Image 1 (cartoon, rainbow over the protein chains, first blue to last red):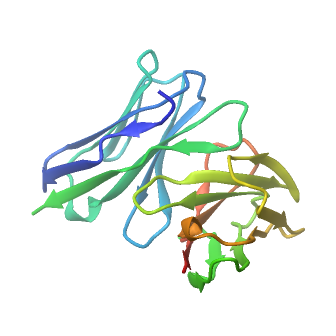
Image 2 (cartoon, rainbow over the protein chains, first blue to last red):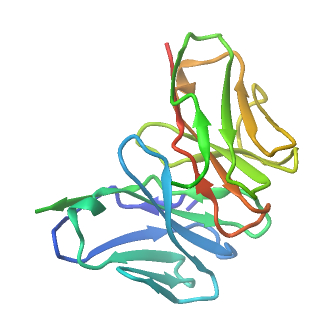
Length: 111
Length: 113
């Protein structure tokens, strides 16, 4: 497809793990990103992964990349109510200077 | 805090008017990108400025224009505003054109009535 695709909603219980999935468009994309957006705020860079990596872990965050399927996921361990936000995945093409974003996944964490 | 500041935070304009939005990039960053985020959608790339020159443009009409100044701050200008221009406008700064990390400001919420 032409769009970066994400499921729109995810709801989890506090303390559970959250997994947010994304399918991107271009197998030649060099970097894949996860951003977090809280209500009324800009985008906060959470983590990114270079396309020659399969996995990246950063504290509670784990990024998995399946380049063959153009599939990216973000796992948040021990999800907290403060993790409630919209999460965007984005890809950067090697010859372009822009990032292409998905529509975002709204994560709701219930106590 | 990313060190990227945008002004104003909110703005209401009438259809047909012109608007200028401003962005101060993070210290040491020479590249600024502008994005439009409509309600319920992801950001869409408008253009990028690198060392005062436009360095890539998305699928936006010419009435969207920009500038970058010697201190690397930037302006986004939109002429002949349309209702569909209502959105959150985000700027992102990075330390070079293809740099890995781009840091976003808080955005300017533009409402066109």
